Image (cartoon, rainbow, N blue to C red):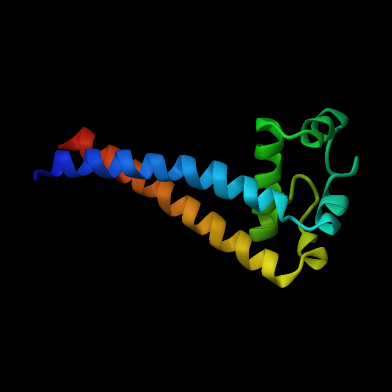
Length: 123
């Protein structure tokens, strides 16, 4: 098998894994987010009224904001704009660990996709 074929197969499977990881595992992660964390983060101090309305339902906007909250827990410096850098003090240790693992794997999948895409373009 040549490099182009391997790159295409890697790109295809990593893309499918990304959809599964972001949607299925992401939804599960939002569901298990502790209420204490949600009550701390989803206030008018950190979000606008429109954004609070977006996270109140269960749709794609809520998925994006929910996983952004998990990213803020995993990497607090990302939440500097929303003034959520101290969010870890209300989070249990298990949730911080799960958030770190989730985002590390997600970043690895995205890097794999871009590397295989780059290999397809260059070769």
